[in-house]
Length: 537
Image 1 (cartoon, helix red, strand yellow):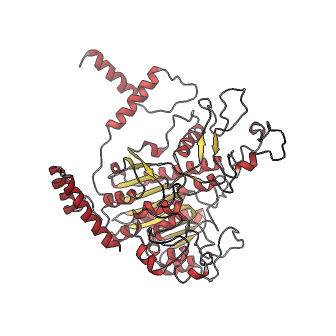
Image 2 (cartoon, rainbow, N blue to C red):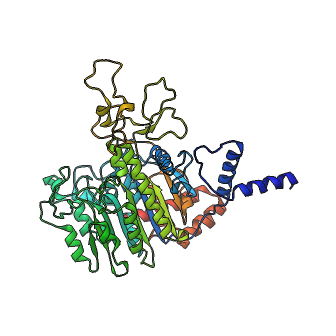
Image 3 (cartoon, helix red, strand yellow):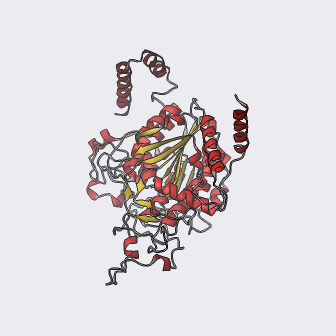
């Protein structure tokens, strides 16, 4: 190596010694961007695949956390920390492996959470609004014999059969679509109480809440945390008007507690954080009649998603065999449906805090951590705002343009808020956003281009970020159902082809690859697929 080359490498070694974020006013000249590029190059060059069994699996789902939400959330959190924001990275954006996930349902171009979560957890794509059933079943109509044939197992079933402890925490109801897909098998995601099921189908299928408490894998969960007390029949002085009410007299939380000696049922953060983990067998935390309140407006009695995640991991990691945990930041999605952009980004920030807890509490070399979304939203960053401009502010390129917001929605209730319905002047169609004194309110609605009562999901691919054993399986662009297959392979879950299976490894790593015969590989794949299908029928 020449003297000039050696000095060049030494120069960059010194520059790479310290990682930092760009502060407003810092110089972004040539040396800054050369350092930035080399820093990223060295980070990638240092990455190594971890090819060992994943003892633990944690799946983080930011419900509705599309790429535009991640970008806006990155800037939002960076700005709250005093940076420009654009150069900031959320903790999961530093994970070594990333991919793009195709989210469509088999019958919808733009999906819902039931079909997408079913794909993530079962390895099988299904219909819009259905939970835990494949395409043989019909939405809104229960046929007992068809449902029996269509019933899907999930990563929770496989983990439990493999000796792992399992559980989930969410900021939605524990009976909502995403957690429901982990344990329920039902023709409509809205059938959370028996009163929500049409009378002609009530003898055909149990409501989602009963499936959680009475049937496997739900009844075997060591951790259940979220909202949804009303669906579980927990008495309350107030009723959530937009949610079903049980009429069968069951208090499912009490039934769960009676069926699980040594368990704890908690309803506030103090009781949750004071649990004696060593002497507790299971935890049920119910923190609201419906969804858990938004973090920006919740009382001090309500735990954060990070609080719930911490206690869940502390309990689950008592199992020497390992665990599987779902953590859902569910109110990112719910905020977007109302065009509450600030609230959605605040929920994403709290979701990132929960990921930080997990990274601190587990051994990374034995834990596969996946961060993804079930779907995106009709949410965008637009215009030409200046570098470092408030992400919740205006997108104007020049002062001559009428102010408009950087963050906006294609549709939703924000349309009516912003439209001046009384105006007869075609040049005064919209409320002047720069004069609106409510814009700092967490419930402020950003502009939407078409009125809908609830803003819709988006259909573009979502990101997936992974770290830990076999996280390198998540690269490129893939179907959403692939996630469950890769998880089962990484963790060597029972009866699934994996790197722990000597016969599977022999065919795929010795015979097929050494011979280079594609037909042989495909034949072997058909054999293993047939074995899997026969197991689940």
